[in-house]
Length: 359
Image 1 (cartoon, rainbow, N blue to C red):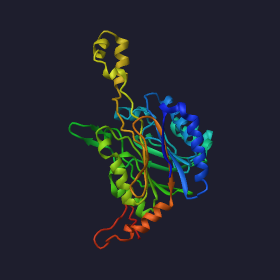
Image 2 (image 1 turned 90 degrees about the horizontal axis):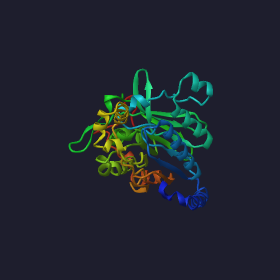
Image 3 (image 1 turned 180 degrees about the horizontal axis):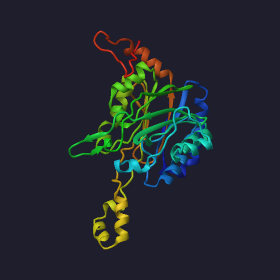
Image 4 (image 1 turned 45 degrees about the vertical axis):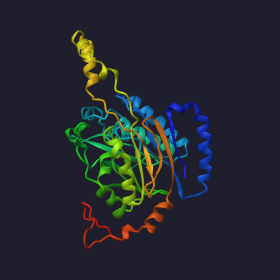
């Protein structure tokens, strides 16, 4: 099982990397049960057009690696800040929508979903589009679009658990100051990979949601675009992924933004003095300070049904490649058949629509 990460700082080795990926891909293609996925970890800036171009480049790299599916980070089109969500929010398509010039114009879809649909059609990839702020009916959601290789929307997940935390000596963040919560369980089917469930970041902390996906909806892979921070990341990021993988006896895939340094203005003690003496400087500095810097933990990761980390990276920009042996899911579920050993006389799993596990 291949597990590699390719950092941008090693681009001088791209030729060797590509030849190695090609060779490994030809071997794995001999086994229909093996499917390659790519987790895209890149820096996110305040420049939406730059972020779109970066995403395009990373999706292209995923295709060149031989992946059939790629995953983008949470909130990749702009800053992860409650004050930024409204400014970067876009109108997004619905499940079943396809890419057509007249649709994008009439329905006023934003540039982020249009780019994802274009790139899926161009590359033939399934793209789990991380998340972007979605504007809909006067509300803003943290939304993940899943795009099929024909450029059609095959899944749409609005983050159901909002990140409202206040860790003493750590971080305070309240997504609910700006965002509304979604109200649905999201999954889609891919030939060769099976059924795939989707959550976003904080959703991973709720095992009940993951159990709905794996036990009622029979998902074999769970995907969580996320942006854990420097307080929760080192403590819980890998731990939660491995826990969800073991709970659901499934693969778990995550993609995070790369960590970026704060803009110079946020570290400049002279900013306030300069602004007081310069009207133009004041306006510029206030614009820069509007969106507080958020440091992502990074470490995009793939975890096996056994709870092993099979591919990961550090905090720097990277494309994480993993080959998934889908037979391992059924092997795990047969060897340790917890799904068939539930004590339904003591407890039962029911989703919000009344569906129950029939195991």
